[in-house]
Amino acid sequence: MKKNIKWIIIGIVVIAIIGAVISQKEEEEKEANRKKDFTQNETATYKDVEYSIVKVEKTKGTNEYFQAKDGYEYVKITVKIENKSNEKISYNSIDWKLVNSDGAEDTFGAITAEDDVLLSSGNLDPQGKVEGVMIWEEKIGDNNLRLRYYNTIVDKDYTLQFKLD
Image 1: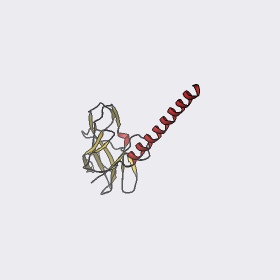
Image 2: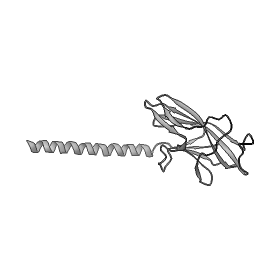
Image 3: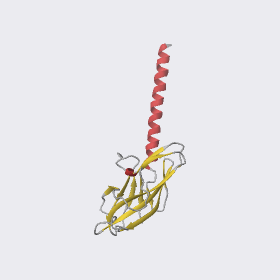
Image 4: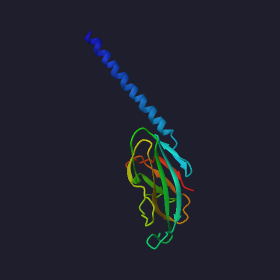
Protein backbone atom coordinates (compact mmCIF):
# COMPACT_ATOMS: atom_id res chain seq x y z
CA MET A 1 0.00 0.00 0.00
CA LYS A 2 2.83 2.40 0.87
CA LYS A 3 4.43 1.70 -2.52
CA ASN A 4 1.19 2.61 -4.29
CA ILE A 5 0.94 5.92 -2.42
CA LYS A 6 4.57 6.66 -3.26
CA TRP A 7 3.90 6.06 -6.98
CA ILE A 8 0.70 8.10 -6.88
CA ILE A 9 2.59 11.05 -5.34
CA ILE A 10 5.39 10.70 -7.91
CA GLY A 11 2.78 10.60 -10.69
CA ILE A 12 1.09 13.77 -9.40
CA VAL A 13 4.43 15.60 -9.19
CA VAL A 14 5.38 14.53 -12.73
CA ILE A 15 2.00 15.66 -14.10
CA ALA A 16 2.37 19.03 -12.31
CA ILE A 17 5.85 19.54 -13.77
CA ILE A 18 4.69 18.66 -17.28
CA GLY A 19 1.73 21.03 -16.92
CA ALA A 20 4.01 23.87 -15.78
CA VAL A 21 6.41 23.32 -18.70
CA ILE A 22 3.55 23.28 -21.22
CA SER A 23 2.04 26.42 -19.69
CA GLN A 24 5.41 28.22 -19.83
CA LYS A 25 5.91 27.22 -23.48
CA GLU A 26 2.43 28.51 -24.38
CA GLU A 27 3.16 31.82 -22.61
CA GLU A 28 6.49 32.16 -24.45
CA GLU A 29 4.79 31.51 -27.81
CA LYS A 30 2.08 34.04 -27.01
CA GLU A 31 4.74 36.65 -26.11
CA ALA A 32 6.73 35.93 -29.28
CA ASN A 33 3.62 36.47 -31.43
CA ARG A 34 2.51 39.65 -29.61
CA LYS A 35 2.48 42.86 -31.66
CA LYS A 36 5.34 45.10 -30.50
CA ASP A 37 5.59 47.76 -33.23
CA PHE A 38 3.07 50.57 -33.56
CA THR A 39 2.60 53.85 -35.39
CA GLN A 40 2.43 57.13 -33.55
CA ASN A 41 -1.37 57.18 -33.87
CA GLU A 42 -2.02 53.68 -32.51
CA THR A 43 -2.74 52.65 -28.93
CA ALA A 44 -0.62 49.77 -27.69
CA THR A 45 -1.85 47.37 -25.01
CA TYR A 46 0.43 45.28 -22.82
CA LYS A 47 -0.86 43.33 -19.81
CA ASP A 48 -4.14 45.29 -19.78
CA VAL A 49 -2.36 48.66 -19.76
CA GLU A 50 -2.82 51.04 -22.70
CA TYR A 51 0.06 53.21 -23.93
CA SER A 52 -0.45 55.99 -26.45
CA ILE A 53 1.28 59.07 -27.81
CA VAL A 54 -0.87 62.15 -27.36
CA LYS A 55 1.40 64.64 -29.10
CA VAL A 56 4.86 65.05 -30.63
CA GLU A 57 6.40 68.50 -30.93
CA LYS A 58 9.76 69.48 -32.38
CA THR A 59 11.17 72.83 -31.35
CA LYS A 60 14.46 74.73 -31.09
CA GLY A 61 13.17 76.07 -27.78
CA THR A 62 10.77 78.78 -26.80
CA ASN A 63 12.80 81.05 -24.56
CA GLU A 64 16.39 82.04 -23.82
CA TYR A 65 16.77 79.34 -21.15
CA PHE A 66 15.39 76.50 -23.20
CA GLN A 67 17.37 76.35 -26.45
CA ALA A 68 18.63 73.29 -28.34
CA LYS A 69 22.27 73.34 -29.42
CA ASP A 70 23.14 74.15 -33.04
CA GLY A 71 21.95 71.50 -35.48
CA TYR A 72 19.62 69.97 -32.91
CA GLU A 73 16.02 70.35 -31.83
CA TYR A 74 13.98 69.24 -28.87
CA VAL A 75 11.57 66.38 -29.42
CA LYS A 76 8.76 66.69 -26.87
CA ILE A 77 6.59 63.60 -26.62
CA THR A 78 3.44 63.51 -24.53
CA VAL A 79 2.45 59.97 -23.57
CA LYS A 80 -0.66 58.63 -21.88
CA ILE A 81 -0.77 55.48 -19.76
CA GLU A 82 -4.14 53.98 -18.81
CA ASN A 83 -4.37 51.07 -16.40
CA LYS A 84 -7.28 48.93 -17.60
CA SER A 85 -6.30 46.05 -15.31
CA ASN A 86 -7.64 45.16 -11.89
CA GLU A 87 -4.25 45.56 -10.24
CA LYS A 88 -2.13 48.54 -9.22
CA ILE A 89 0.80 49.09 -11.60
CA SER A 90 3.91 51.23 -11.46
CA TYR A 91 5.21 53.52 -14.20
CA ASN A 92 8.49 55.35 -14.67
CA SER A 93 9.89 57.69 -17.29
CA ILE A 94 13.18 55.77 -17.30
CA ASP A 95 11.33 52.85 -18.93
CA TRP A 96 11.10 54.97 -22.12
CA LYS A 97 13.90 55.51 -24.64
CA LEU A 98 14.13 57.31 -27.96
CA VAL A 99 16.05 55.72 -30.82
CA ASN A 100 17.34 57.96 -33.62
CA SER A 101 18.26 57.11 -37.21
CA ASP A 102 21.85 56.39 -36.13
CA GLY A 103 20.57 53.65 -33.82
CA ALA A 104 21.47 55.56 -30.65
CA GLU A 105 18.99 54.81 -27.88
CA ASP A 106 18.74 57.41 -25.12
CA THR A 107 16.71 57.93 -21.98
CA PHE A 108 15.18 61.36 -21.86
CA GLY A 109 17.32 64.04 -20.33
CA ALA A 110 16.13 67.46 -21.37
CA ILE A 111 14.07 69.48 -18.96
CA THR A 112 11.79 72.35 -19.74
CA ALA A 113 11.32 75.83 -18.39
CA GLU A 114 7.78 75.77 -19.70
CA ASP A 115 4.56 74.61 -18.10
CA ASP A 116 4.96 71.03 -19.30
CA VAL A 117 4.05 68.28 -16.85
CA LEU A 118 6.95 65.87 -17.09
CA LEU A 119 6.27 62.16 -16.88
CA SER A 120 7.90 61.03 -13.66
CA SER A 121 7.28 57.83 -11.72
CA GLY A 122 4.49 56.53 -9.57
CA ASN A 123 1.68 54.03 -9.31
CA LEU A 124 -1.65 53.78 -11.07
CA ASP A 125 -4.66 52.26 -9.38
CA PRO A 126 -6.96 50.05 -11.46
CA GLN A 127 -8.66 52.23 -14.10
CA GLY A 128 -6.20 55.06 -13.33
CA LYS A 129 -4.43 57.12 -15.98
CA VAL A 130 -1.49 59.51 -16.22
CA GLU A 131 -0.21 61.80 -18.95
CA GLY A 132 3.18 63.48 -19.12
CA VAL A 133 5.92 64.89 -21.31
CA MET A 134 9.38 63.51 -22.02
CA ILE A 135 11.96 65.55 -23.95
CA TRP A 136 15.00 64.53 -25.96
CA GLU A 137 17.51 66.59 -27.94
CA GLU A 138 17.98 65.13 -31.43
CA LYS A 139 19.44 66.18 -34.80
CA ILE A 140 17.17 68.45 -36.79
CA GLY A 141 15.18 66.58 -39.44
CA ASP A 142 15.69 63.06 -38.13
CA ASN A 143 12.72 61.25 -39.67
CA ASN A 144 13.42 57.81 -38.25
CA LEU A 145 12.73 58.36 -34.56
CA ARG A 146 11.23 55.50 -32.55
CA LEU A 147 9.95 55.69 -28.99
CA ARG A 148 10.50 52.46 -27.07
CA TYR A 149 8.95 51.27 -23.85
CA TYR A 150 10.68 48.66 -21.69
CA ASN A 151 8.63 46.80 -19.10
CA THR A 152 11.60 47.02 -16.71
CA ILE A 153 14.87 48.91 -16.92
CA VAL A 154 16.83 45.65 -17.02
CA ASP A 155 15.02 44.30 -20.11
CA LYS A 156 17.25 44.02 -23.18
CA ASP A 157 14.38 43.83 -25.68
CA TYR A 158 11.75 46.53 -25.89
CA THR A 159 8.17 45.74 -24.94
CA LEU A 160 6.57 48.31 -27.28
CA GLN A 161 7.86 50.62 -29.98
CA PHE A 162 6.18 53.60 -31.64
CA LYS A 163 7.43 54.90 -35.01
CA LEU A 164 7.14 58.69 -34.89
CA ASP A 165 5.79 60.65 -37.86
